[in-house]
Image (cartoon, rainbow, N blue to C red; front, side, top):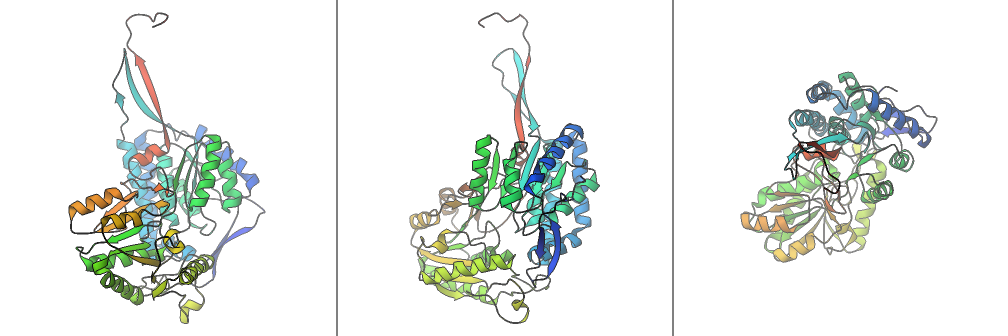
Length: 482
């Protein structure tokens, strides 16, 4: 089967709904669980016969650079398709395509320059390491940033020499086939990258459980991540899990408050809060609490909620009507527990909003740090705000969740930033900035936010196995017992 096509099936179609207006964008045929055997078999056949794994690094890099070039050449069409598929503002979707191309360029550079180790000998030999592919890798991606998330898994997995089976979210099925088509047209061997469509419960579970899959990379919810880890543990195969977040954003009294307020608003309301690193908990030092909270609430009230193709849009719709309803339920429960809405707190009414999955940027105070709204990932434009007294207090509150993906710290004191940054349990720490991202920097979480690190040079090693090799230099034959 040519890369970029879904497996033929008589199962139900997956329908992509534009969350801006409820219209049908397209439909794709889902892959049934019974078809996974054939997909995995084709992947192994490609791995063993295509020669991709053995291809010289510079030639692999040439194909990957061509993928990047083609992604940029089709940027506008791909960005519009993603905008319709999940409702992100068009400018942000263009940035996602740029990031996807950047991932392929980066790992093209990594495989051309990556060096393994010549290890110190402990005998008459020369020893060194090499990287070997796993063979067939499953990559499972979420709906919030499809083209970017898919490229950031596929690029290093292919660079390491694997055949890849990519399963996008059933909510956003349209970008993965486009990426596979572009890879094929750029020179990737047929079936080296295949797409499986469908729900996590059916095609995703069958893929994870298949004995022919040697490594799994998953980005998504913590509960699903646990289920994948259990399945992978039973088969003793490695997994990379990038899971949920409930990231704290900490503002001290000595911070540049104007910049901090702007960053807090951007960090939670950008992407409509549908980001794993969204700064969804704001902790403010007591002496400046009211000033900062009112400043963030004012920005929330003034943020322009609009259609994703509106040039002035700041907050677009949520990715689906079902997800918008989940956000509504989270906020209602928070209000029942004593929360007080300072901004937003409802779906906007009238005009374009009646047909779309829109939700107002929302700021809530009055809850304790143990409230569900302060503990669970909402994945929407909802910020809970809490005061703190001193460093010990904010460290205890910020670390008081099961998750630890990212955090932000605002202070003019380098020493304080260092102390708090080291004390907070998070895989990414932003100091006097927020939500910066680089393909060259490792990314992942602590605690329930995941296992392993994607991106960076070690992102290549994530999709490879280390092999030690020894060349003997003996001048005398071995003797028994030596």
